[in-house]
Image (cartoon, rainbow, N blue to C red; front, side, top):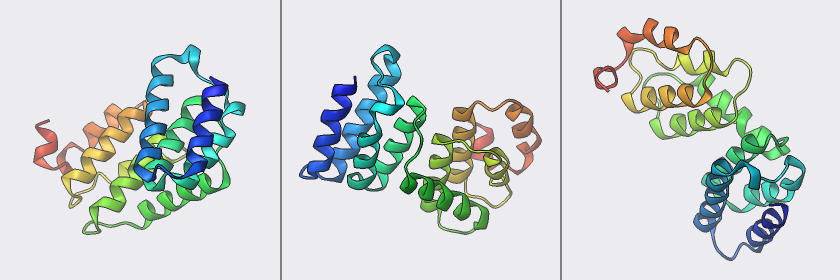
Amino acid sequence: AAGLAAVAAALLKERSAGEEAAAALLSGLVAGWRRNPAARPGADAIGGLLEAGFASGGSRGALESLRLAALVGATLPAEAREIVGAAVTLLSDSKPGDAVDPIRDAVRILATVPGEGDDRLLLGLLAAGRPPEVQREVIDALAARRSPGMGGELVARWGVLDPSIRTD
């Protein structure tokens, strides 16, 4: 597994494949290692892969690198910590009517790399006036995080959820 991580890092550092290919490579590694934990490398073996993923994978590559770090319990590189911090700031400052795509991307980041207090931040996005796309992304993120007590929190916010969300 460590050898595969090193080869993948070398391919990403080459940068000839492009951002989409880099993101696809990282996504495939995450999916494979999630299905087969025995083949998963240790956190210390993927440092180069994480750095290469953040450097070459664009926004999707960065998200896949965050997923990889979370999967193996690796310490996030400084660039990744900055991305997570920016996501928290964006969500903290957001309000109904803001563009949907940046908010959805930030929610996906927090779903991948849970931090202290992020559940409250995400729950705050389940407010009246938030687009159903944002509300759906928040519910999916909270489900992925598997935080205790979220069922009751969602029920408490049932009345402000978009009707299309309540019927899903």
